Length: 272
Length: 288
Image (cartoon, rainbow over all chains, first blue to last red; front, side):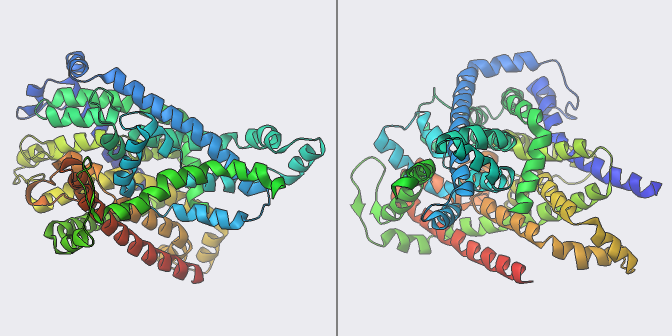
């Protein structure tokens, strides 16, 4: 009994080391000077140069400006996704109306279209709207989330009881009040998952903001980081300091909800 | 119809937004592929010229082969290691929350950030990996400057980022299998190996298919890893030039929107082809 446990934890422990090592290495490089990293053998433990490196990042890129842009885009998209998706999911799950099945299948079919593909034409559409370079170009397309509607519909179908809705109807609740007072409170855990998921996706997105944010002073964190890496590829420490700063806020968001988030994601995948 | 108005309004945002920012762009992509356009001046209709060029363009075919090679190199280890970790996690009881979070963190971390870190680990001159190889007395490998080095580096990044994610999903699949099944197998004298191949894997089929489909859709769209690790031109020998990177390069770096659109149509056909294959696999999986 004992020996298998030791083997199991060694396997899992090795996996954890590999999984977390890049984060450690990121910190090592961000806290040493570039000379320390490039000499042989290189520094392998954290040093004391973090503040110097961070200072250089702040003079090279508008870090807080990019972070604010990223935060605003991710928050805007998340709020709209939660509103649109919960409302649509509630409707698909609990109401009968002509064309329901057809529209739901249509919705699922839209998931087949790979989003990266539409970067070119979407850019042209944004140019027509005069949205190139603006955060609207990041927020609005990100609110199209068929997966969110599908996932939440599954959740609502089981979690919201028809008797409760019937009772609300008898009390004279219209459609919107049924959604607000009966549907929404029950799906709050599902909103948590979808919210974190959307926030993380928009925060980390790279290709689309790279294409559509043309003003070098108005970037998202990922694009600014990519630029920093391209233009200063010899100053590893500075680039890594920027990388650490860009990764931390999201890790905090993730770790706050991690337990439930992972469980919900796994459940969704197994059911779907 | 009127009495259903609230319901139609409630689902309308998705369909309206999808129409404007999803469906219309796809149709417009097809239209653009028949034009010659630099993104600024007037469009000029050129018929099938872009497609004629596309099928004779060695770089396009290279980008397709690169994409598929990187997809295989990354997906096979990712899903295999994910399964192994899921099995070990399933049979172990302690610290599972810690393990889950540690394994899951890579998949929510900014790809740009981890690509930069991997770039420094795999760097040919000062990289950590070559420093370790050097210290061990082994020959250094030109990771980011040779064809297979580039493909292995990009794949390693993908494996690192997605193995834990898939392990968590497989674990949920394993936990959904009733323990009665395992007990019955033990009573019937099945060995662990037999239980795994005859019972567990077949019961996990829908979950495995889900991860295969997700990896296919993700793999065919590989972009950020390559752009950060080897740059817009795809590195030496264009070994890291994926299809989406080629599309991006043609449209947004060389201002050739018409040809970029034609690459997009080509990519769409490839995605469609793989979706059909996946769909057939799902159908077979359901019948079995």
